[in-house]
Length: 286
Image 1: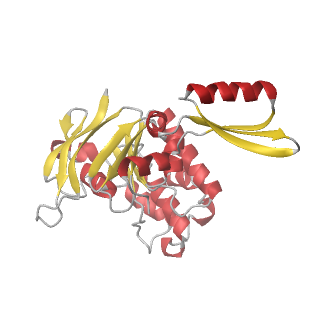
Image 2: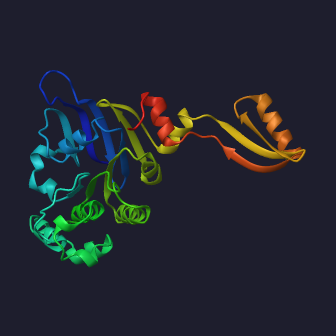
Image 3: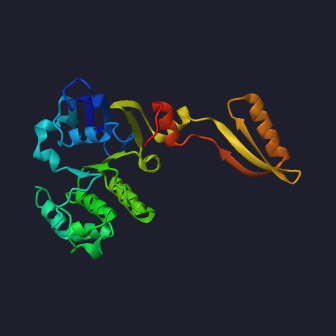
């Protein structure tokens, strides 16, 4: 069952017929981590901002549990959490005060701000002004703020941007835990490694158009090279060969090598999600 559906979405910032989002449609299942992937300027944030009501819906439909979000208003906003790539905080308030104030805007039970700050590793800075936070600390505070109303669906825009690997791992663990608790997650990112690691399905968007939509595994298998690279010892030297798994002669040669040589390494040559994106869209992620 789809929790949220986007149908034939268009958006033209200038009203000149140049669409930043062009006939975008997809559905997100309840409990799914759905990745929305593309480079800067591809239309990711525009779609998210329309879905969350920050941009006016010009053309198309956004349905939440089968109802238009434009009809749900506060009922919808009480069930979503949004984390922005560029932190928008009250700089004169402390981290704790930011969460306390934001929690007061909802008409549903909210989480303890101190608990959330501890979850993202900001317990030691909860009484510091947000203006004194580093970029990574602000990013974590915005992420914690998105969780305060126990949202049914989380909209996360580059949630690990600016974080070191340990902190990024903490955020990814929280995302997984929220999914286990039943939350649905819309993850907008250009980081293909995080998307591959977390997402159940992904959509590739480029120049406002969805180019592909499937599981990361299916996309990589569909567009990747089915081959194996082998390194083996021969006459005191390391030799390397690549065998296509789709060619019978290569498969025979590979089996012979396995049976007759001392193999050192064997690597499958499936494409990464980033390589798949480049192949599908014809452009990189910068």
